[in-house]
Image (cartoon, rainbow, N blue to C red; front, top):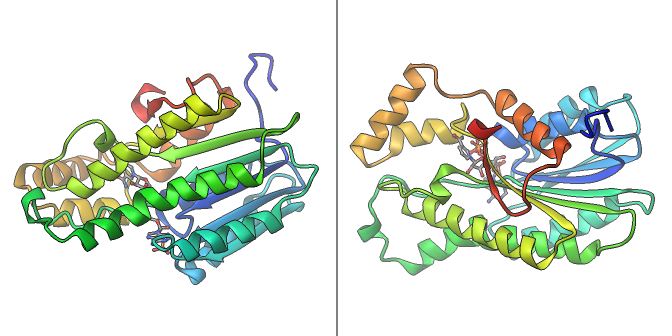
Length: 268
Ligand SMILES: NC(=O)c1ccc[n+]([C@@H]2O[C@H](COP(=O)([O-])OP(=O)(O)OC[C@H]3O[C@@H](n4cnc5c(N)ncnc54)[C@H](OP(=O)(O)O)[C@@H]3O)[C@@H](O)[C@H]2O)c1
């Protein structure tokens, strides 16, 4: 803890990051590893085992104090309940009794089909499949982790939801994404009300130079939104994941946010 009351590390922690194979999640894994005390564990989940192993190699190089960090790659598809179950089993094996912090970052997400408008989504199976990955898996994983590591003296519990402006503001032709992000934010607000000891952060990382943003600016059906995303990119207004992640870590270390609230990068 610094003289201003800001923490300087995340403790001896069990950190779980979904969507850690690329984009923002991969950068979060690297930043977190630099803030973990020896004896910590980092569990990285996504579908691509090869990309996860590449992410783990970056992390192992970055870990504070070099050794003492267990990094576990868990290749799972979180759009199915089996994926959540498998991830939870790996998480449980990574925990040791001397850990003082459990930190879950719900980062994995997808845009869904943004090439169509709301009125074309008549197929319930398609909508269910989107919500299963983007909403249900995040709810069930968070619940399972909190159930597996219940409240006890000396254990901090933190849950991060990587959110978006789309949770608050409608975007034409992004009905699945906006719906999923709005639902997730409410889910985490309920959690914050129910479990006052759990620190719950919905962090909106801003426009990031990732595969998701590339898809957004090329596939969006709505011409005005597509143009504004392309202009943003052309004018250099898209952020690097490192810039955004540095801000997220600042918020987590200062620990002054209202639990359950939406914190936008531009407010940090
Ligand atoms: N990029 C932006 O401008 C932006 C803006 C605001 C908020 N966000 C949010 O930030 C988060 C990260 O976005 P990003 O831009 O880094 O996205 P991204 O580049 O598309 O990466 C998505 C991550 O999720 C994983 N993933 C996708 N489907 C999965 C599945 N079925 N099961 C398990 N993992 C899966 C991917 O790995 P695999 O493919 O290997 O599974 C990847 O690691 C998302 O929640 C997104 O909504 C992004």
